Every structure is written in structure tokens, then in C-alpha cells.
Amino acid sequence: MPERGRLLAEEAAGAVTLGGVLAQIPEGRWAEPTVTPDGWTPIVVAGHVAAWLDECTRVLTAMRAGTWDPAAEPEESSAPVAAMNAGQAERAAALTRAGAEEAIAAARTRARAAWEALPEITAEAWSWFEESGPNHYAKHVHDLTAWLSGTVSDPEVGELLQIDAEGWVPFAELLESIDPAIRDAEGWSTVDVSHHLAGWMRQAAEVVGRNEGWGKLVLDEVNAGFLAESRDLSFGEARLALEDARSRLRAALTGLPGPTAGAKRAFHDSTVDHYEEHLPMLRRLTDSDGSVA
Image 1 (cartoon, rainbow, N blue to C red):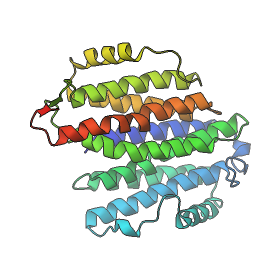
Image 2 (cartoon, rainbow, N blue to C red; image 1 turned 30 degrees about the vertical axis):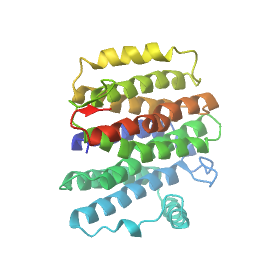
Image 3 (cartoon, rainbow, N blue to C red; image 1 turned 90 degrees about the vertical axis):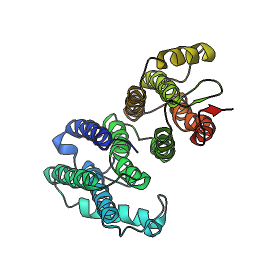
């Protein structure tokens, strides 16, 4: 499981980015119902973000009390979630700009307190805090960025963020469960995997930031360079580098008003596809005594 403070820092950074976009909205446009295809105003978007933070607080509090029932939670794309979003939007519409911003601040305080109060961090808690906090902020940063630029937000961005979050938590959980001293038959350890993924995420962040796709890359040469660099790192250093690179990549994608197909492909390649590529090796290492074929 991640260090408790690591995800708090990620949440705080995401909130700063969201706040920065909200600050760019002219006073007279906060009630303009064109941010999303559903007719949400910036006020409704802000109220919606606050409402999901409060849902996160509810779940984390129940986890701490031992009363949480995961089977009772609706699926991400289900009708009950759509109904919850509609109800949140209706309630948020009655807020003022100041009320909406205050709602986010108060909900963040409650969610962070609930996270810090957990006796232990489980994968379920991690998923709730990440997806209701930094991942959710990023989705609506894109919505608002596109709207401010006069374009329509890309629904595939939210989908990419969601599948990344769903793949990231179990991948990172497995990564952290393995002794970094263990290496596979080719000499790779979790330090090497962490730095390797971080390197490709940094590369992707650069091309996505330019709203481009991959250019010509000599894969073996790039991979060899990452592997050589990782041999001087501790697991903690490599793991933090991976967190930082993932945050940069997510920010690069969501800060684009209209991401190209190439940029979205680069994001997917270096996140979801890359997790899948390295999962088999990590699973072999899980049962290893230090010698993995």
C-alpha cells in the first residue's frame, strides 16, 4: 500500500490544478450551462466534485467502522450512479460561486480527515480516495479547460483516466508487495520496473504536452538507458519518480482542450497497456525466492 502522505500530496496537487482552472472563469460565466453536454455550469461541476468527495468520506468512514459493504456500491457506469450525478447537479445548481468553492474546500477537509483516520490502507480505500479526488479533479479540469477555450470536452479523456485508475491501483499494490532485492531471470527488480514505467510516462508527458503522438524511438536503446539509470536508485526513489511521472502525464492530457488521437494513444500506451505488459513478470516475482525463470 502507498504511504498515507503520498496520496494526500497527490490530492492536494490535483486540487490546486482544479482551483487554478476555476480561478480563470470570469465572474459572469459561472452560471453558463455549457461546460458539459448535460448542461452543467461551472457551479454545478464544482458542486458535483464536492459531492463525490463526500461520498468518499462516507465510504472511508464506513470502512473504518467495519460496516462498509462493497457489494452495495453501484457500478461506475450504472443507472444509480447516473441518478446520483443528476441529483448532485440539481442540488449544486442552487449554489453561488462562493458556495460552490466553499463546498469543495469543506468536502476536501472531510475526505482527507477520513483518509488519515483509517487504521490501514486497503486497495479499496486507495481506489475511492484516488478516484474521488485527484482522478476526478483531472477529469473536470479537462472539461473546464475545453469549455474556456471554446471547444467541447473529449469524453474519451474521462474514460482514459478511469481505466488508468482501475489498472493503476492493483498494479502499484503488487509492485509494492514484492521485495526489491528479488530479480527475475533477466535481472529486473521492482526498482527497475518502477523506473522503466516512470521513464516512459515522462516521454509520453512530453509528446502529449505537445498534443502529438509517438515519433520515432529506438525502443531497445531507450529501455537500456532506463535500466542503467535504475541500478543506482532505491525502491523509494524509483517509486516516487513513478508517482511524479504519472501525475505529469495526467496533467498533460487533461490540460489539452482537444487532445489528438496520437496524444490519447500515447497516454494509453504508457499507462494501461504498460501495466498489462509488466504484470506477468511481477506475478512471477510474487512467489519467488529470489530466482525467477
